Image: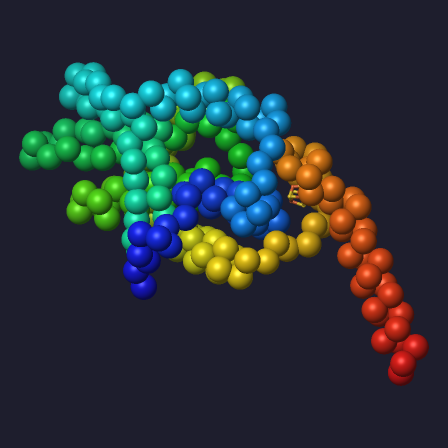
Amino acid sequence: MGYSEEDLLPLSALQHLLFCERQCALIHIEQAWSENRYTAEGRIMHERVDSGGRESRGTVRLAYGLALHSFRLGLVGKADVVEFHRDGAGNWQPFPVEHKRGRAKKENWDRVQLCAQAICLEEMLGTAVPAGALFYGKSRRRQDVVFDAELRAEVEATANRLHELIRSGNTPQARYEKKCENCSLVHLCMPKVTGARRSARKYMADALATSEK
Ligand code: SF4
């Protein structure tokens, strides 16, 4: 299935969705946004990289802040850096590099976002993009990522779920978890209160259902 231009959603929303569907809905349906230390550090780091322009380093050409889209995934966004490596046949092989604050995560979120960028590049440039890299600011480490079939399937499934969520227009209920403490929207979301309210409603509904039996 192909999406039209009006249906394109921000590529960055994939990460929001994987982190928490409620956070994703608050940002992309309810247009709520609140910056915390983590998002501010991430933004500053991206602003440094995201200056636009091009550069050559030996046999590698670099493009900064490259605009991306995929009608197949229904996504639009930007790549921090795309390196173009010259192969033996004289072709330029794209290799996306995404800069992240902090250290590598055990979850697949960053790899999903990077692979989505690769799928955009493949669609835009008509060439295979088999690998890219994540650069982590805190550890100053670069981690290579291979875009295998499993990761590509995860990108497709995440993009489909994102479109489903935005189409529904419904913000899921909060559920307090440890990750809420690092969430930029915790003060807007109030998961302990709104999640508890839901529990109370559910308790009442369950209690009434039991008394009717
Ligand atoms: S505070 Fe927790 S439940 Fe609320 S949006 Fe953030 S991660 Fe999701």
